[in-house]
Image (cartoon, rainbow, N blue to C red; front, side, top):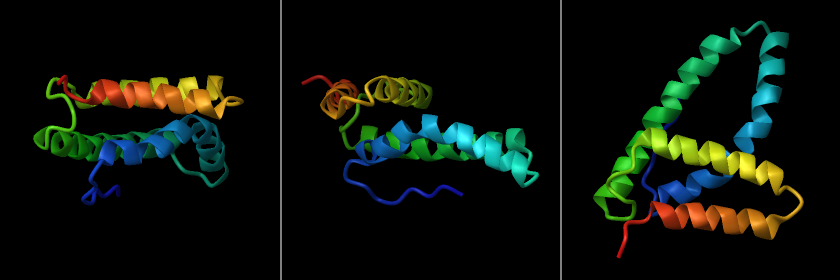
Length: 112
């Protein structure tokens, strides 16, 4: 189960885990087959828990005014997936990875 505790900037706290997700998918699938786990079912269950946890974080951030109110949880997931792909593409350039992440995080904030 995924739990969500109080975080002053919960969305930023998710960033490192989200970026590593792309690399872990392959390993998780291989490991699941080796131990006889139904990877499809397990992935769906964990995916729903992740969406629920992200939804809680997103609503909290929106309520405090830290994140734009028109953003949906599916939008956030799409951004995390895109950031993951960008990070893989920029793996040899950590400063570029940080710039991409900062642009995405800046885009989540409400306009001033």
